[in-house]
Amino acid sequence: MAERSVRISCVPSEGQLDTNFQEGRLRRPTPDKRELDQWVKELERKVSRDRMRDELRRMREAVHRRSQEMWARQWEWHICQVELKKKQEERERRCPADRTGGEGDEKKR
Image (cartoon, rainbow, N blue to C red; front, side):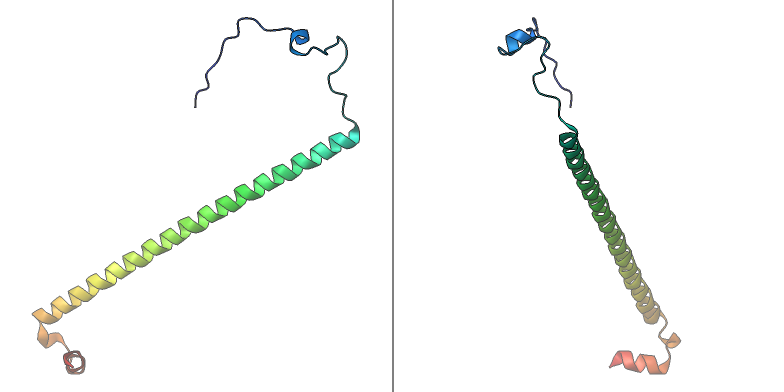
């Protein structure tokens, strides 16, 4: 997706954006080590959760693809069996003498 760019004619100074702005003073105090460590842990948790979700998605897709392949093979095998049966029946119709006596009697019953 292409994002539109908007042209800003005049960029306001920081003092215009924030009425409480004072030169040389940070708007937000620098976080201490404990707070930074907490942020890092949260980010690591989110990243690991995203990785797990992506891995599970890949596994689900692989299982789905594999099941589709297996279903296709089963279907092909079924079609081959039907064709073989048709060919066998056609051969038996054309050449009834080729059949053995025992099998022919069972099929007639």
